[in-house]
Image 1 (cartoon, rainbow, N blue to C red):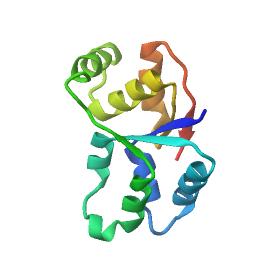
Image 2 (cartoon, one colour):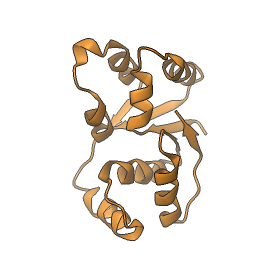
Image 3 (cartoon, one colour):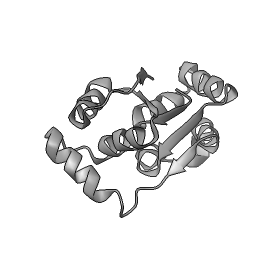
Image 4 (cartoon, one colour):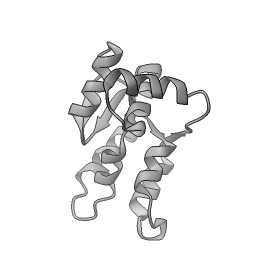
Length: 128
């Protein structure tokens, strides 16, 4: 899969100054020409103090930020209803991956997998 969607767990792992392995994997993905999509709502969950999150801010520069727009609220709500869950951000991550054929990098593969199952699709879910 040449495109990946990051959830907040992926960005939190990249931002961890004590463990650079996720940041290194992110760099290797970009070096290999992989496209990385980050929903803006995911970035908003993780960015707190940009001045102290230099690694995260640099990583985000290599990603395509995808806005949550008025076109998304109905399909996200429908997926939440079908799944019996309430996490808007996870639902948007899954719908973006479904729409683009992307894999998902996630710290929570069970929740992501449940949402994917509700859509009746399979996507690669890579642990952070």
